[in-house]
Length: 484
Length: 95
Image (tube, rainbow over all chains, first blue to last red; front, side, top):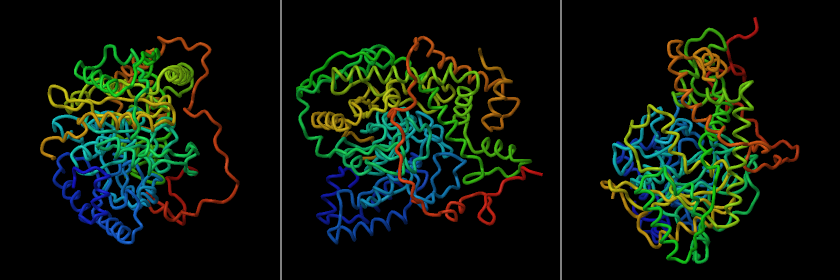
C-alpha cells in the first residue's frame, strides 16, 4: 500500500481492498519502522485512527471526496487543534494549538487522516534539518546525510514511504531543496495561493505553504485541496484555483522553456548539471522549445534574501516572549530579564543569529543601507523574471548546487549553508510558483532535483511540465534502499 | 564597518536575547561573516529603483466593520505560562 499513488489509494479504498483504518495502521507501522530517521516530532496515532474511522464512515455513506481516507503528515509549523505544534523549537515545546491552520482544516474537512507532525529546522530556518530542537533528520537515501531543510522531516517521511504525502512550507527553498535531496516532487505555489493562517510566521512576505509528494500528479491533488481564498489571511488571493489534476495531462508541445545562463554557469556539481541538461533534452523530445533568458541580478538573490528574511523574522519572532504561550524561564528578576532569558533558553543558535541580523539591518542608521537596499534589489530580481517570461512559459535549472551533504559538514559555517538556497530563493523574492522534480541520481546514488519556475499564479504549467516529464522518466519512482 | 563585540551586545539587547558576555567576540565574528555576504548587494547599482516590500504590492483588503471573531480568551489563555482572572501575568513593571 505504501508504494501506491494517491490515485491508486483512492481506487483501493473505493474498491474496499482496504479500509482507511487499515491503510492508516499500515503507515503508522511504517513510521515505527522508520523511527531512526527522526522524521516525526509527534505521531498522533489515536487521532489518526479516529479520523480514519470517520473517513471509512464517509466512504461507506458515499460521501467521500478524492482524498478522503488517505493519510498525510503535516510539517510541525502548521497549527493543529489540540495537537502539539512546536515549529522545531524549545520555545514552543509545550504549545498545544488552540486552533487549526486553514491548510490543516481544509485537508481535514476533505477527509485526510493526519498521521503526525514532521520534524523541521527551528522556525523553518535552515537548509539541512540540523537546526531542530528535536535533533537532526536522516536522509533515507543515505542516513549519514541530511535530507535538506527546512521541511526535512516531511521529505524524509514521504521519501521513506512513512506517509503517502506531506505538507511543507517554503520561505527560500524549504520545500524544493529537501524535495531535490530526497528524490521527491515538491511544489511551492505562488505567494497568496495557499492561506498562511495558522502557519507559524518566519518571513511573512516570502512564506508559502505547499506539498511534498512522490509525483506531480499527487502534488496536484493535494495542492488543489489546500489552495484558495481565505478571509483569515490578509494576503490570500481571491482568485479561482484552476483544476490542477485536470491540467497536467495536456501535451507540452510548443511550450517554451527559458534557460537562464546564470543557472547554467558555474556553481553546481557537474552531475547535477548533466541531469538538468538531460531533462531539457527530454522536454525537447516532447516538442517543447528552449530559449536563452537572462536573470542578470540573480547573484544578488542570496544577500538580498539574507537581509529581508531575517528582518521579517526578527519582527515576527518578537511574539515569543514567555507571556502568552510557550516556554517561560523559571528564574528572572524583572520583565526585561524574563524576556531575555526566556528567549535565550527557547531559541537555538541559528534562530538567534537571524534575529540579531534582522534587528541590526532594521536598526536606526542601517535601515537604508541594508533593508531598503535589499528591497530595491528584490524589485530588480522580480523585474528580471517578468522580462524573462515575455520569452518563455517557464524557466528550468537545477534546484540545488549539489546532492545531499554529510550531516555536520556545513553546520559550523552559516554562510556555506546559506549558499544552498542559491537557485531557489529568487522565486520567493518574486512570489513565483516553483517545483522540484527528481531528474537523476549522482555517482553515489543520491537524488538530483530539476527546478521549474512558473509565471505568477501559473502553477498549472509547471505541474503539467513536471507530470509530462514523469511520463517519460522513472526517477520519481526510485525508492531508497531498505524502505521499498 | 565590522560589528564590534560591544555592538553585538547592543543588538542582543535590542533583540531581547541574553547572550554570554564571554561569547560576544565569537558572535561578532560570525555575524561579520554573514554581513560580508550581505555586503555583496553593493556590487549592484540600485539608483532610482523603487523598493519592493511585498510580492503582491496591492493595498490590503478591507472588510466590513462587523464582529466576526468569537471570544476565545479562555481557550487562548489555556496555553499561557501564567494567567489570573482572565489576565496574563508578567513581573511587576510599575511600583
